[in-house]
Length: 173
Image 1 (cartoon, one colour):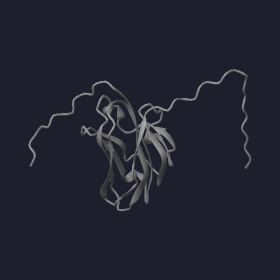
Image 2 (cartoon, rainbow, N blue to C red; image 1 turned 180 degrees about the vertical axis):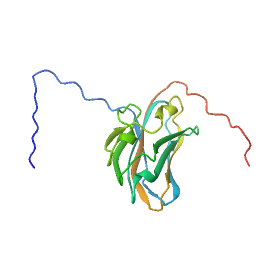
Image 3 (cartoon, rainbow, N blue to C red; image 1 turned 135 degrees about the vertical axis):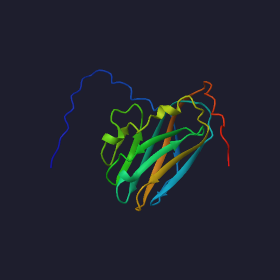
Image 4 (cartoon, one colour; image 1 turned 180 degrees about the horizontal axis):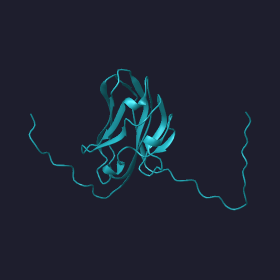
């Protein structure tokens, strides 16, 4: 099983590497219970208005990732479904959910290394204030368990005025 890599080059000046974009906020690992909702929060104390946000995560499920619905909820209460029972296999590793990716998460394959478009667009968070409590929810529709070993939010922001948070409506009981 031999392999080789052939590189063709010239003496021109290479392009600069891509600049790292955004600030990374890292969440804690957590267990995914069987037939339940599991969640973890990140409290962002920095201020700014979101212009782009991506989610990076690694984890596993003892049976099949297809049993998992994964959503992110912003401090405004905006909910974006990242993965809607669309993954297969038993693990994902360093999976980045990014609106600008070329492949949807549903068209990816385990271990989902690289960037994928989420089930719903993350641009739903654009123009919101980034400061506050962000919650990652995982609904496991199977009795087997799993874990999220790593997750983070990569937030690109500016200093423009964010849109107003939603006003409370309805009656609380």
